[in-house]
Length: 431
Image (cartoon, rainbow, N blue to C red):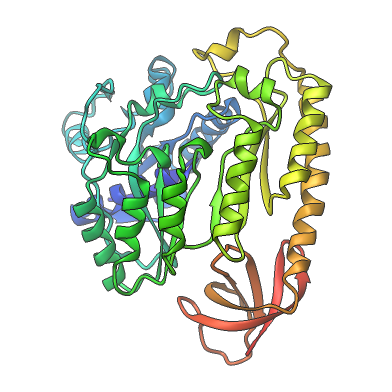
């Protein structure tokens, strides 16, 4: 039977889908890239925003139209956080964020053709779900999930209810997984989690994220270790100092900001101030050569005034983020912010998003131009028929190079000189 996989959301979801794909492949299922040829659809959901929920419903309709007789498996954060809504959707198998039962549920479904709903509540102290991905060759960099769950309870966020309490992958399992990936040819891995900086907190023995980073960097064959999104208040000075000694740790840090206004941060229940965030940025840029800082910013949070938003604009300019992901605040049922007064209209959210995008685009443009003349190493990932090959520097600057050799550069690292910019990337020539 052929399975078509559809994944929404973050790198953790991408990792978990790949893990499920590998397990089902071992059981004899095939993967198809076309919905029309699928016997089974597995839809791994996200529920960070209301928009993601709308996209899910639209996608389910399209999949059903593409292959009406296919079995639909709905799994992930939406199903876990909003199980009653998920149960009303036209799906055959529904599970939450734990996906270990899906092979057995599929087997049972093909025996009795009865709808199955299996969503287990997360428990305090539950273990990290055993999960290790083998080399697949599908992508140039490999995601490695090392942490799950969140105990922050930001007032706008439903993820703690979808993902449960924090839990971490043991260092021994982390090392063996990365060793297998390195043996399979991977040169770059990305450590990812729901709240990455909480790694090791559940072990209660002093283990922290920096220990996982050092473990990953110690594996022979891995040239680059990259970190996914992090909460800014959890990086200690000692952690930064230890990480700065690791030559293969990429100097690119995605520090989730959400707002550049202290009043708004407090309403969000974020655990830092703008001054503390700025101090961390200064430390990172001092500790890492060619350090790049990226972030997420939410506009139009409940109660955000024009003055509050102006503070965010000023803060973005002050930090000079190399790239910013901007999104309007989305009311999520069951969160504290759902009942906050001062909800901002959609029109105002859109206007603020456009205004902030204009500022961030200029900063991004200036950053890309500042790289002209630099000599850097690029790990190539994509190639097009026109001979343009695309890759990334260690600090995640995208670079495009013309390749007239006719040979593939994918998975190869080459030294280049940056000569210009083209849209959201730098252009370069091989040295």
